Length: 395
Image (cartoon, rainbow, N blue to C red):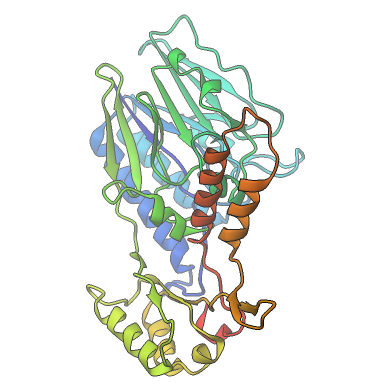
């Protein structure tokens, strides 16, 4: 018996100003297209169970177009796989901020999908010998995660942040209402645990996974790119309950995202920076047309940023769906007591020094604490930081 586990579609997601010929935001259309291809792939697999771990929509009040597209695709899934059990748990993006507002997720119950939107629900499918506990990401605390003794296989589908799995940087960037640890899942109770919220495909245990999002819809797509396995970027999980074998199925995003190798512009003239930028763009296979591209330039002084060839940069922006030239100025220097120039301590230096020197409980592993601090700073470095002095080269 096989199941398919998907999550984080974020239908209705919009970014950048480009529109399709029909007037729809281009990225919204991209995400809708990726979702359609994923549904087609699931239909081709023909699993007995489909688990959807939340964030079907990007907002709890999606547009009519997003609702219609979701309804049509789920109806196609229901029609093509009439015997397949489909269970959906709402994510934090699906959940209204006020109790007075109703959830749109109940709409899918009308086509035979089992939905947990406002509270946890257990669904027993006696013909399969399967029970599914679906836990939405809603305020009010996490329910007790217990299995059903009547079922041969107990499945858990939930939208949540696992504190000891999801990196702290990501957890702070996109806060989930439901937060718990790997131990809180009681993995021994479940044949499979389907998790949603973290957009990077992640194995939690032999029987537990974050499937990851279907497209690049997080608050920092460049972080996703830096954390993903090159062969397991975006897609969903197939799991065989009998053999306990997990298979990742890739779903090609509708658009290429390219984080180009960064340039160090220390001691370069504007003309030299222009030249190396041009060479970097020329090396992109297939060009940058209609792609989403970031190029980081480190250690570039303010005056050099100002004198870059902005006509060429504007042309790059015209070609790409989005071209981000992320110019980062050098760290400042100061003079010591003797008047000689000295490097001002960096954020990394300061954090390392403070963590190494401050008092802390004797049972705390100081080396591990410093190591984690450095890792979080490195993770944060993936977030695009615009150079305030050169707004014309950063979007």
